[in-house]
Length: 209
Image (cartoon, rainbow, N blue to C red; front, side, top):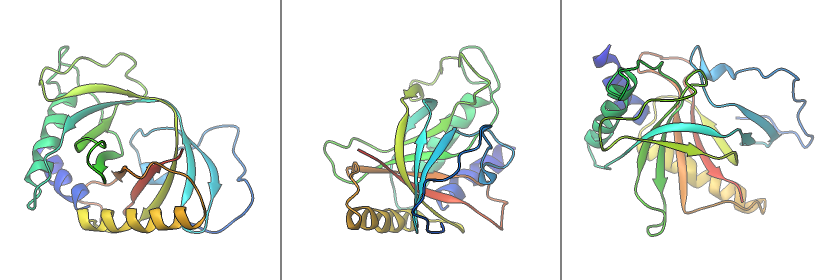
């Protein structure tokens, strides 16, 4: 299992919408997106479907995070993933085992400073109302308030360069439409384990202003 998730760290790390000008019909009962699979994931409301991206409103969420050292070979990704994986498998103050979730989110600064340093995060599942404190000083819990984001989705196994390219495409689309967003960083989100070959789902997010 540990080997599987270490591979996941590398491949997540390696890792379309149809146009409409009308507001989408929002169901009374929330339906988890298909791309979350069997795992828990953050809840959002689709605000608007654009031609090549979506506007989503996310509920407040809780994450467990760790610093991420960017390097050419991706070793920093593996180290960061391992720290978070150890936390959810019992290396915490209560030795609690926590279910894996999606997406694995990486915070990617575009302009430094003041965007800060890269981090990797696991979503804390809804069922864990009071998550245990990490025992690793490089791992910490973080609350994320409700936020509005623009999301561009794409498939396949994605390298960091692919996420960066998709983020640039999304930024250009947002500027062309006059939509305001925080361009100092983007979030890259991976949803699949390394053994999923078909229907892989990756996303880049910009936070709306």
